Length: 225
Length: 352
Image (cartoon, rainbow over all chains, first blue to last red; front, side, top):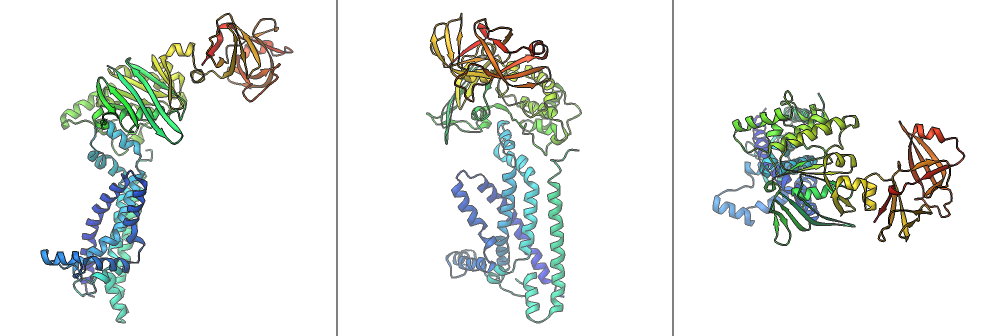
């Protein structure tokens, strides 16, 4: 079995969850704190879009934005000599965009469920907004945020459609686990696919167990004893 | 040392219009639920923003809509005890108490230790809020505020979350703790018992409006507004027409009261407390109502008699009157053919 898809997937998923995690929290905090409900709905809709769109459509839009003939793609190529399309970076980009809504939505839900009087109490006790967020809101929302992170990681690991569109399926470079499975099956080599499928199944199971663990932790503070 | 509040906040179908000045140590804000009293506290603390008005604490302007001044809650130095105490659930009692302190670790330890001792929280330092009883949680919440040394202490329905059998004990404890505190205390509640115990002066808010502010004891003995009378537990209030200087007609009860005291011209209601009636054997004395008893409700030590004026020709849903009587008194006369209740002169409350 060729191990490169696993390594590529692992690297892609690890880097993308790092980016998604903080980006998602940042966006969640921003949207949760918005005053205007109308603006909230619009921004929320835009940020959640990648979750409901077919990944190929997401990939299509990413092509439109980062294609070398497009303004942003051209700019990156000319000034930074960075070509995103069909590079390993593209797998990360695809994974981030597709997994972002999961992270954003779970952490936003978790933030909004934090008792508002805790925040108010922090303010009347003279705690700075930053301190309130990291010392009060974040710990209270942590189970939700963590399970969002785990879900986003799994989603990034399983990303196929958008990756195929913007990163292609280049062996040893952009061929992630899902793409490897597809390639093996397309080549009629079912045995070759078994190994990859087994890895994906195992990782998914571990991820779900972790999520259950985090959600059960949520009950710790509300339980007496 | 003074606190001046004059604010307005507009909602759909509701306007909060709170005006009062506080010079004394303890002030109670009494109001029914939904009257806007908690919102008033939140505006003072800076958690909510009024639409217009002025809040001045000890000469320091906290909020002034005309000059666009609106200090953040962090800048106001006001302590707020929330109804649910708002303890940080993932911090221990000690961490909660130290949460708002901007001190070095060492200084913080000294300070929290001192506070823990004065609030009798020894042994509970490392417990999480969920492991504490309601009374202990409240002590930790108060300790946390005291550690922060606010200029004013705002208490929002401080005893509403406690079991009733604990209330008396905890109220006494809190009163002791408040004595440690040098600043002002402003308490919001719907319970007249709490106001009576804690506050020399009070403000009554009704439907978003400050109705009156005065000495607590005076208000309870001689309320001047129907809303105030209701809040102080007067159950029987009737619309009235002033007939002359010494007689007034209670519309809902269809009864004319004649009084030695002068009836003010500008009253709209009269009230009689449920324990003010006296049972008599005949209807000879003036201001004696012949009663048609609707219902008798038994309580632990008393009976509540619900009755109407027998001669009421225009009864409505507001015609029923409550009379509270000890079991002994009631048993003496319960076999009488008719029930006559006399209203002593001084117990007729003349209300605006």
